[in-house]
Amino acid sequence: MKNKANVVIIGGGVVGCSIAYNLAKKGLKDVVLLEKSYLSSGATGRCGAGVRQQWGTKQNCLLASESMHIFEHFEDVLQIKRYIELKQKGYLLLAYSDKELEQFKKNIEVQHSLNIPSILLTPKEAKEIVPDLNIEKLVGAAYCAKDGHANPFQVTLGYAEAAQRLGVEINKFTEVKDIKIKNDTVLGVQTNKGFIECKNVVVAAGGWTQNIAKMAGIELPVYSERHEILVTESVKNILDPMLMSFSYNIYCQQEPNGSFIMGYGPENEPPSYNMESSWEFLETMSKKATWLLPPLKNIRIIRQWAGLYNISPDRQPIVSQINEVEGLYVACGFSGHGFMLAPAVGILMADIVTGDKLTYDVILDLERFNRGEIIEEPSVV
View 1 (tube, helix red, strand yellow):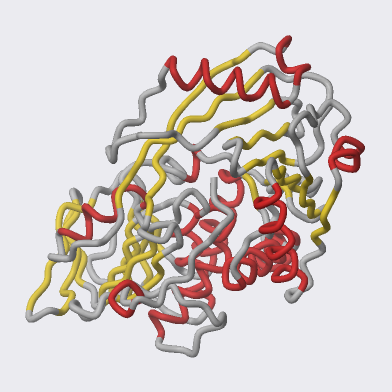
View 2 (tube, rainbow, N blue to C red):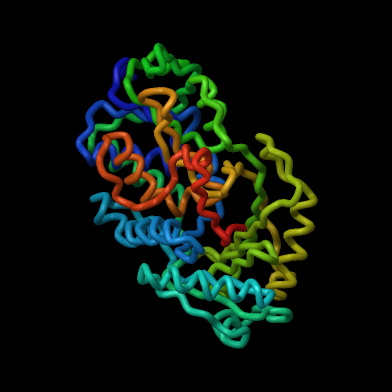
């Protein structure tokens, strides 16, 4: 392990690896990435793997659209051989009230301004796309055929491989113990394997980012919360798009191998680092899914797991330098959407660290909360 670096990135998930690659692509030398376990061992490897462009704010649509372009051309962009299992069979968003349908119409106007090919559907048209869908109580739907899902492990490993090719050093099973600060300036990082002197530290450690930031004396306005997922046995294909409803609170997809992956946003879940599975989730998830897709009542569950959402006050990411400490940066608060936005976020953070003009016109800096410049996103599970 190097004992001196230009930039140290803490966190070996998809966001950290994307940042490492994009910094190296800009020509930065001596970039080191630290991961306390294996790559994708945190939220990345526990996510639902969806990638969608159907958002309600222009900045999220922009980041998602740019990220999708990279997913679509992953091997060419990164100049590697890595099949990421991208399945673009769409996202079908379900509306169960007139108010929700009106929001979909507003969202589609924003999406169309960025050439995202989303459309509004009637319940009958939604059922034509998913014949087994229960359309009882359904008012309408929104659909984008270019949305879908990809393999988060393969995406992360692809970024890591491309970053290493450009000179990034990746140290797995290397835990950060402290960030050394003097006169409000970063001096380096203490790990379980030694000290790394550096001028810049990027914290992209998912649900543990706020704890690592505290090592530098910074309190971040984020918290971590358990979200659970289950996966079923492989069966014949009956579902092409990802199904999602914000009001019914569910997402459900069928993978290329035939397994279903599904989850929902928990209610009254306390902030914690709990990643245990619960019977309550299993029961509620089963009821939700079988009402939505009745054929699922005959399918067997293989396993379930939990991961951490790192949640910000406005449910939008914080991709920012820290003004109080020179050389400190954070990428956190993705609120469950880090995987699908990671390609664009890596580019954005590389701009911030190098002081270049931002590639994307977005407001994701930490100071937005003090300025009151918050852009509420209406489309979050």
